[in-house]
Image (cartoon, rainbow, N blue to C red; front, side):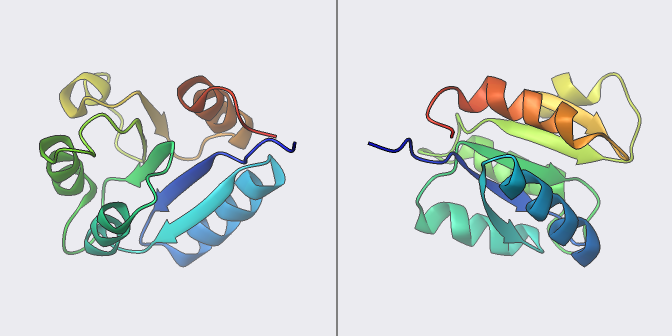
Length: 126
């Protein structure tokens, strides 16, 4: 029986970043769903299925990443979802403040992101 591919939800308002990162992650064996806004991401998360991780940009128009993360952490069924923040904001305190599993500063190497995803998504990835 073939192993199920781990799925992630990538939330970023930049079309080029979403497309390039989605392609890179799929090449590394992940199934990738994308959302351009915090509102769209929240709808996808609520509708299911739940991804193994949320990849989240902080600076977005409308509902920004921090607001989305607060809603996810407050919602039963989503509160424990692993979150990896992808941002250009440099602060050593972001990980703790946001209660994120990791914070990767843009630009980052895809292999670094994959190591973090392997860690939080665990087995089951091809």
